[in-house]
Image (cartoon, rainbow, N blue to C red):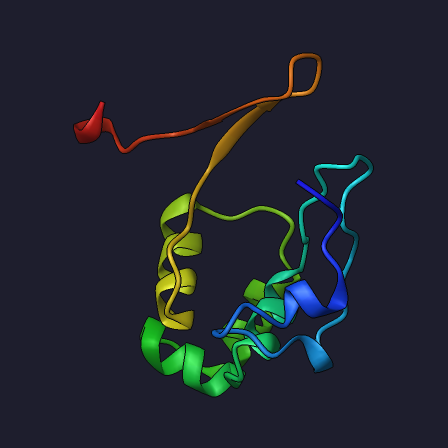
Length: 108
C-alpha cells in the first residue's frame, strides 16, 4: 500500500481532515493514517457535546476521555460508534508484517 496522499485521504467520505492534525502516517511504505481521538472527532465533524450525548455523558467527560492514554476497550468502541465508525483492535507483528484483527470472544 502506498503512502497516503492528501488526495487519497480526501476519498474517506466520513471524514473532513482539513481541520485534523495528523499525528503521523507510519514509518514504512505500508503507512497508516494515525489520528488522536480529538482528531477523529474533528474530522467527523462532531463536537464534544454531541459525542457526550451519544455516550450518555457530557462535554467535560469527553474532553477528559480524549486526553487519556489508557481506557477500556468498551469505552473506545462506544466512542467509535458515536462517530459512526467501528473500533477494530489488531495485533501487528513488525518482523513479519502480519496484522491480525482481534475478534470478539463469541466470534472466535
